[in-house]
Image (cartoon, rainbow, N blue to C red; front, top):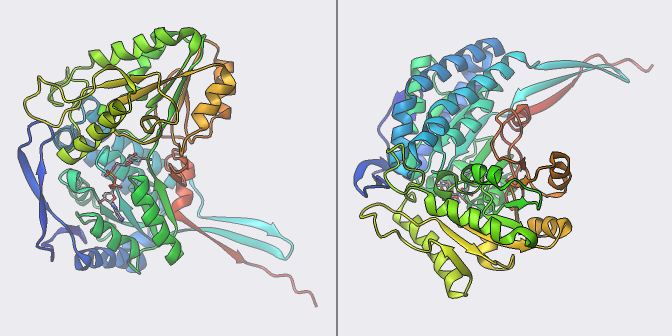
Length: 476
Ligand code: NAD
């Protein structure tokens, strides 16, 4: 593990193999940190915060170090992107952006915000003046999943560093090999000792981090089930947390939609990263007047996805991250088939892939929004097409979900699209495309989470406000 700017032996003697998703071959192994390993990392982060150079630095100095950190990550981008794709199956072109250059861009954005923001604001008050201070929330425990391991870690590390916090990162066991690039890059950039610490491990390692008494805040991305457990523990401890969880978002295709535009956006909006993306619109709501056309577009798109080794740039759909995850995805598909939900393409394992945890891109149609395939997150290349009558019906179906994370509206009339977008209970929604914007808040409503990442708004989650009643006017 990486603690106090040094690579160090772990106390734990437990480890797991890391298996390449497309070949099923072992490419490494990672230790699973125990409570003592977590304790050492948290204490390093605590000391760096309370007594280290980091806490005394100006924002401008911190911003300068963050820019250097971004450069070091970018210098390793190709290697990191390849390593992630081998572990989790992300097609390489996407991985280059999401795990290569994207994290550096996020760090640079927060370096800019760190340099600009004022730590203290003086406000007039009835008694004279109050100084409103923005102080770092403290030691941040960051827990990440395997689908976009670099992006999702930086979405926590960057605002934390911008506010002067220190971090202990607990990556997912499936994608721990790439996490160590943060240690290498931080060391090369001269990020002070103890500011970034990395402890690989299982959910128990994560649970130890969540409940450690010297941690001040938890930033979690992962499943709704784990988020509930973490949120409950943080509630017990009165410990702030941000939770970025699952989704089952809706694409609303209006009857005036340009279906060429819809087809061009489908890869991003409904199948990104082999369907292993939290904000995907895996419910496609089609107007009855154009239902067959929409079904044809979706089935055609799914049928043309190219399965294979994610390192091959012509491949547009890689394998699932693990054998266990493929089994979960197939169980969702088998369940829907057993209930008689109509399938128009896919529906199982591809016959032409000898190795790797592949699932055929799968499209179910005529789906009732009450069916589990329309309600449960599958996290694979599986979509459900649902017919609707009119705009109110479409909005009603979109909102009839436990989740509220992503969404999209497809229309030739942008103003009408915006009207519909305003009515959907979701954290993010696109009109005629769905692409993340680093400069705006990202997160979910309902079971999709608590709080927001990205944008300047994310800094609030790493801030404690302190009001200093500076000059009291004597009343006597
Ligand atoms: P997961 O919840 O199983 O694990 C995520 C991380 O949390 C891992 O590091 C894991 O070891 C750790 N963990 C699990 N249980 C824990 C616990 N009780 N206490 C502490 N740590 C714990 O999720 P996963 O299978 O790795 O990822 C897939 C899920 O992540 C999907 O549901 C997906 O929607 C969600 N996700 C959400 C977003 C978002 O921004 N909303 C982004 C990506 C993925």
